[in-house]
Image (cartoon, rainbow, N blue to C red; front, side, top):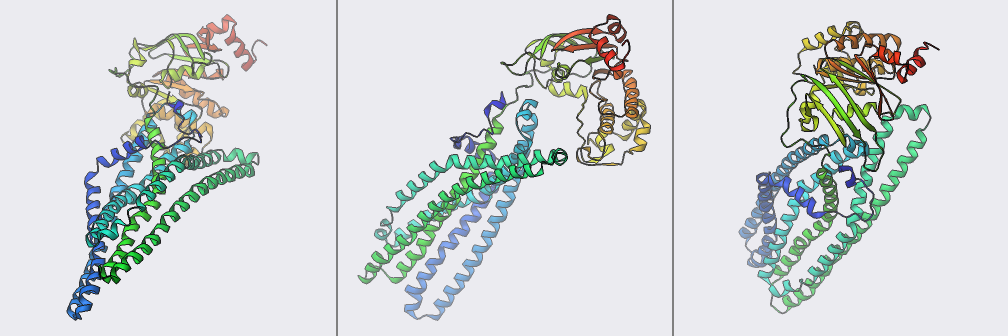
Length: 592
């Protein structure tokens, strides 16, 4: 199952999977070869122009000055200015091109991550905090953006610069150039040690960085509870502990980064001193001109500039590959519930919904949540499901939506196993009104249409009239602005809107999961009347604790301990004097 991959586990020894991350990065670049190639051309041109400047200096010192030629000096100055202006122009083009290509790539990656997250099962969301997913889409992709817009192309450019500079230096004096060779194995060894040591450290930093928005999201979502119980200080203390944890992890990484960088920096003055010593001796011996030694000193800066940048970029690369590692792990997750190879498409429920001997548990080592559940719901009829909390009522409807799969038995719609049906067509045919309602920012009309502008207003008005709830929408007009999560509406008001939304979407089967909970008597009567009207037009499953909402259902099913205890009409179950009759007497006091 996907959650077992432990995307957010805190394994201190976990290292970056460079192969998987490289595949992800290459796949992103592969479709954008032309923009990145164009940026590379601009950067290469700018680099070659920059490398031409030391040669101009050599020309001035070795040729123009000894010849005392003012025209040669003026020409050198003009070429120097022109070279610098062209360098700045091509550098501007390269930065602009990379920014465009990088933004396009990041937008595509974010859309890909979001589409993948939306395809995962509810089981994944039950074990993964929303804040951590937000960190994937925002923080980790932003880290990758720095890699694409600067680091990768700069490294390629630096390799080119390093090669050209080395070849030019070798052309002017091979012996002095070869003297610099021993420093390269030292650089390689330092780089290998840095990557080896810091790989798990960067993974840990990214994980802690994802914990902070996750914790913050949870606390802000529960702010009313925190304030009601005066737990603000406790939440602040936990946030401070998380920030301190991140600070410590970041500092440890930065210490290694600084030590690595300073080790690299020391090699530059060491190489310059060697050039002064050996090159100066060659000048004194008449084997080399002053212009060449100055060219060497200037080119040493160009030679070490890529090395310095690489030492800085190595930290960015580690951070980026750590972010890419976590993104690739997320993208590798696969939903437990998948579309069948040759799906049947549900267009309507012509006959019935059948549960036959269904057994279900959430994990293999857990107990059975449903045990041998069987019932038939004919088209156009209604079924009320009642029972104690945790008895399995909601699980029945979750299986109907295929939010989870069952282990034994059959669930069929018109004789077709729902596991052979297209998930999209199955869920499009069934509407859901839950106890916990989520409304989106926008108007009441927007929420009734579920933000789908293609739905005509007339369908909304028809649904409201059909349900007989015009009075409610006079009090809450369709152009009323709804705040995030419906914060400016009561729970009962949100449930009325959610019920009307299910009617507007015109789904043939409706599941009402505690649709009348948390309502005042007036709103409950309103909803009860609306449900009576729905029962005339829809196939309805009603999950409820309050029996006043199920009296008009065609059949009533009592579930206890995951088993069907009683099944019949309201009058039949009352006459039987069993569990339903007991529930009824407890709520209404009849017969006591």
